[in-house]
Length: 312
Image (cartoon, rainbow, N blue to C red; front, side, top):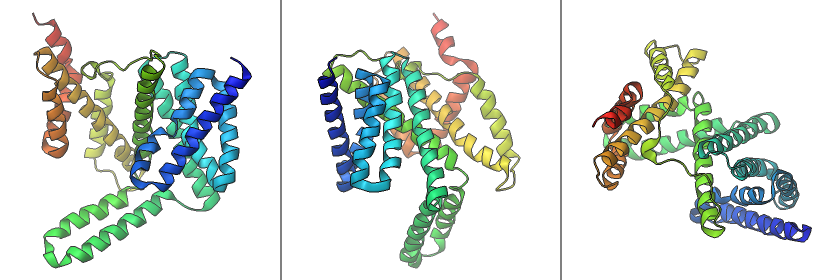
């Protein structure tokens, strides 16, 4: 490709990136959506031109953004460009969809960690502590407003304060879940765009009904459950390990359970609307979500889908 065409597409990618940043920072509602689009210009440029031109684009974007935002440019570029470039390069190499997701997730999680550590070391600001302070002020304001309604709200406020106090312990799992979720959405949006606009055949995720985790996750879940059952002292290494592992493993079992539900209705020839409705209702009713998690444990432990497929 001619250098002029490369420069032209680089300028377009930079312009789109700066536009998304302005909307994200200045338009509250629409900015929530454009936040997902920030890595996309780097992803598409990397997929089309390769790793080296994409790195030069990121460095040039850093210089331009530094003029506009000052030192804030570095964490902003790091948070968005790194994951976009890694995801775009993996798509260019036609890696499996889950392999692309893994690479993108690791890149976004690494960027979050670097920014988090940099904020503490360079600025003396712990973002988690700041979030806790904001949440405490919000709960305190709500408590003052609703205090006249009687003592029935005391347990709810105590639970809220306890959750806020535990945020410092579960920061790692929040980083992992946010990075993975963000990577998934960026990959999904970019793949839709690439297939629609350029006819590029990206590797698709398999149907949700076919998703399944390795059976070893059962043992991880069991060991973590036993660790939680021993009730380790708050603040110890075992307590922090349990507090971070359990949410991830519970999410794994819930995904496994929903995948089995989708498989079951597909096997029975039912409409996909039924499992979708069950999924929506499950997030509204925590008890039903517990049933889904148990179903995922059973499916993963006894391979229910394989048994159903083997039935005549």
